[in-house]
Length: 257
Ligand code: ADP
Image (cartoon, rainbow, N blue to C red; front, side, top):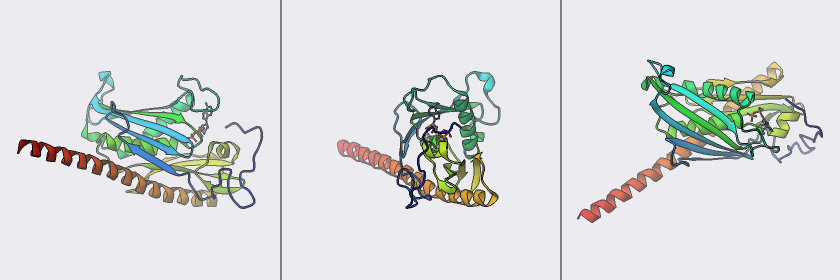
């Protein structure tokens, strides 16, 4: 990963980070589901300056047919950064990094999907990064798992993700782009909070054994907090739909009487 040319102080003398956060603080997350009409399921996640859309199509008949599997659905994933998501215009063509992230995000979500319910089908997941500021794979996973749930795809549980890292020699939660570039390590973690199964763990840089264990525990705890928020977002959405349906049936009843 490239180093920034002009290093900034990552932790000030009050122990606060560039954006005013404490070391154990993650950027506030806002999530919405059902934000796109055409997709079967969708979600929008804003985490700090990251803005990401996730859209799901399927399960639907596999095309081309030869990719179909007789015992389960095939999950396909495309992670893509919009040309305007970075300070310098990014080429819209898929980079090696985007191909790698598409793969790791798919692998982080696959264990959660009950794909055996839909043999010979595909589930297509599109993650579009509209604005990026470090941690987009984690925010993408958190948002994508909501989009899968919104599409009505049966799952063992939701997947939540966050990264921990090391900046100025200290363990810090949820690194921003500047912290990631100047820091010593970044470790994205995704889990299925319901069962505590780890579905993604990566490491860029180095941590001591003790730092790894402490960082991992912080990441897992944060994933549980994010999971509570994911569940609340889904509940809110489905209560709103339920109310809408009930109102409609009341109106129809009234008209019939
Ligand atoms: P993640 O977003 O999961 O942390 P990386 O560690 O690979 O993934 O990237 C860190 C950050 O670097 C991204 O969130 C983005 O802000 C920035 N970045 C990635 N690719 C580019 C690019 N091609 N041009 C400019 N900035 C980029």
